[in-house]
Image (cartoon, rainbow, N blue to C red; front, side):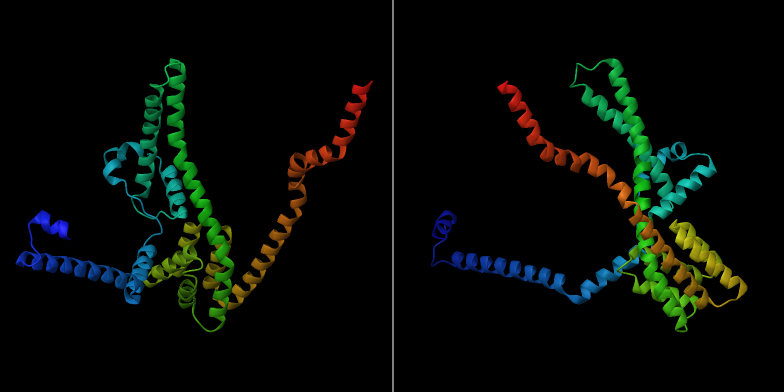
Length: 318
């Protein structure tokens, strides 16, 4: 402190020293006050609850969104395919992977075009530091990079789609049991779906979002059969397709929804048990290749190795 005072030309008895002390004290006070506000905001239950509600409302509008409009808009009319069948197939895969944005199709093909240009450019840039490469090798690397750039988004999209389908399939048994309980307790189909969506909000988020979207479509005036068929198209799960077909048929003929759901639940449980038994029966066959490649060589090494060493030693003594 004395060094600072001497450097600033302030004496301990002068008014400048008092101003300096007050300034340092004010700075420390405001710093401590700001830190306390940050800590209070992070631990405040009201703020935390508002953040959770905001996050859940954003997730309900769509699980995944990505926007490359500023980059692909000029190329949109060139990269998006003209065939309606291909566009419909890609759009269905995007929806089943969780991308519901209207710009998802355009962004997907724009990303493919960007990667098809970027990968060969990077490979050609790297080839400048490899003078031993021939021209044919460089051309091959460029073509290979373009092919990888075109096919890589398809593989990633299929991987994301299969992962989401697996999550939906894993959450279906719990949703079906809860739906049976809700319907048998006297709730209608729409309130039962809403209740199940709330119960599965944290354990099976993807399925809860799909059920919430079905309920939202019903509230907006869409017919129940159409809303349920939309659920089957968005999910891509065969078991959900079967459930939707059962519910549509039940609504059309006016039969008991609770009885139909109970029967389907029992059949679905039996189907799961049969699938588990089928997977268990395949274990013996699948274990042959690891045993042959990993266990048998070590077994023969331990069992036959000492005898081989003795034979080698006997031949050396001859």
